Length: 246
Ligand code: BMP
Image 1: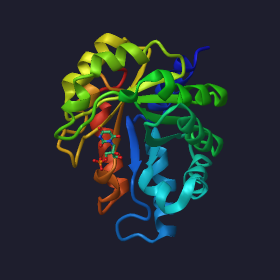
Image 2: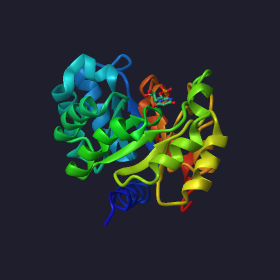
Image 3: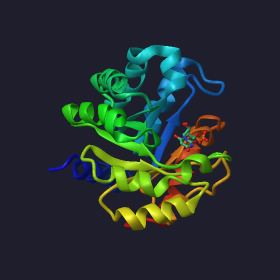
């Protein structure tokens, strides 16, 4: 079975089982007014309502790769949950290999790499390591912020190039620019995963990315800055319920 099929089946199975489309972007820990212990406890309850957790550079700088692994690995014990490292990996081949080796070896399932860097001599390093670990690579193909057109005008080229690579299991596309998701889904068909950040604090309505073809919505501040993260996560399930079976 290809890695693409393995990971898309797995993610879609968790979506079905848990009835949600949510990946938490954990860019802050501890968060809100909670202590570290309280946060860990909140997360251990939230995880039943999440498809996965995405951890990026802010936490890696704060805790290092082993510290982060400890925080997220303990969550996997409670509930099946995809762990994503969002380093937006974007270096040359041999450096990318080192980064990917470190994060896959502490238990991450998927890693995010910057599509604009190019495959040969660049992201190839991430993909080779992913294949060794039976992990997957998500390619950042367009971004959500104001001046992202500098990257986003390369969308088709990025989709064309990386959709031919085994080990690439999906793409990151912005909820704030839903046309990029529509275009990508039409081009890619159903075999690839689409993860979409930008709902909530960045202005896109919750659920919109799913309506236009994404599998997963990535939400950070809308959850971890909320007074009651559990309530926020449960209320988002209501939003996603209307897309069941889609
Ligand atoms: P928030 O919901 O707090 O806006 O967080 C969005 C998350 O998605 C952040 O972790 C950010 O790094 C990520 N993200 C994004 O916002 N836009 C992109 O184009 C790509 C991202 O990975």
